[in-house]
Length: 311
Image (tube, rainbow, N blue to C red; front, side, top):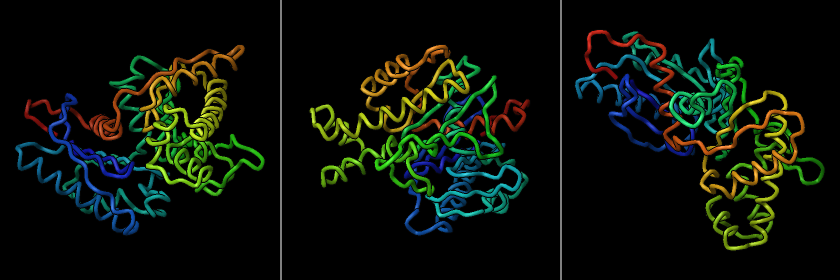
């Protein structure tokens, strides 16, 4: 199985066997600064080269799993992703042309794939109603409802683009709306809002968290704003969908209990009649999307009964 995760600043790629063993993994740059065509060409080159490597290593490629950010049209295989400069880009058709040979191709959302991996072999194992919420450059959710991963024809899970900030405090989101959760509670938002408040450039959310630990009041201010918005979002989600467990991932989960315990406390204080979910850290880290791509693709094929090693 060839698996590629195009989410994040670098592509995560691998060859994965039917039993989930990762036979090869690597990362490659995503040339976003060069435009959407360059990103697509880099993806096609990666998939072709990984397929060639699998063959050279004595494996047979049974399927290809590719996961991307943005909105995916499940029927046409086109993708709209602002951060990749893709607008109705025919990703699946381009992959099929590049690969040929009738190899099945699964194209899915990177966060839903990560959630699927957490459901099958991570922090959400054993749940039938749960959510995977990575807090990274952006915010989106993988929703498991009554045992099924919800796709909404490629549109579901955009919790980061719901409004939880109002009035003068609301900032315009990249999506065009004002006051989205992503504008205050993503890793990118923490760094941007700290810089705007202090006039000082920081090295991403990681440095903001270091400043928070050192007692910096401006870091505490932007952190508290993020926590309030996240608690609002999770209370709303809990009221509507009643998850038993919410797994937090992405870069911000590196804050550990500095993030998780306030979320637990805030949700507990707000709920009245609702079923209270567990709030836990996701466990698969940066591998979640790539592993999810592989699992989704393996679900599309029948395991080779001959006993030959296939990927």
